[in-house]
Length: 204
Image 1: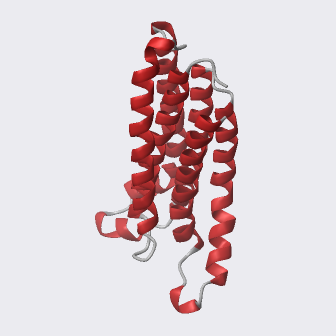
Image 2: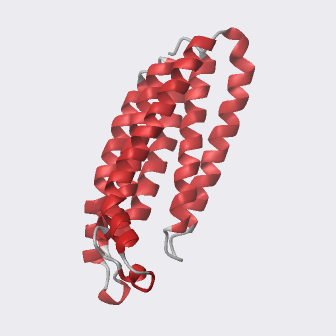
């Protein structure tokens, strides 16, 4: 059992918020027959957040590790993490952006140099999300969240081979590229991992 129920609830709430963001992003990259999945994910994430906030508020008087100093450290870590993620995604996209900037206006739409690297950005952000879960685990002293962080790394890495497997198993007339399948899979797997982490946090 965790020392403070409020910290447990805050951990679940944070996981729920991250899951909602991922499912919302996934909706834009899903096909017409798979958009129900991220919608269900957003609803589940909303329930997790609502319950987490309610439990945190009700159990707050019982104690928490959250202090002004802890909040300050977490905000500093969050900002540093955000900057690092932005630098990483910027590096991945840099070749394509330079090519677009160097091309004439009428040729910008046809630029392909470095464009394939853009498909790696969701994977980078998913890995970044797993790191964020680990930061939350350290901040709130919730060791079980480290398992969620490990699961997040696994989800980020599995999306591409799963995308390839789906592409090869799909009839040719319905074929989509591996990248087109890996994008929504990254969001769905990461979101599902975060929901699972929130539930497991409550059960642990």
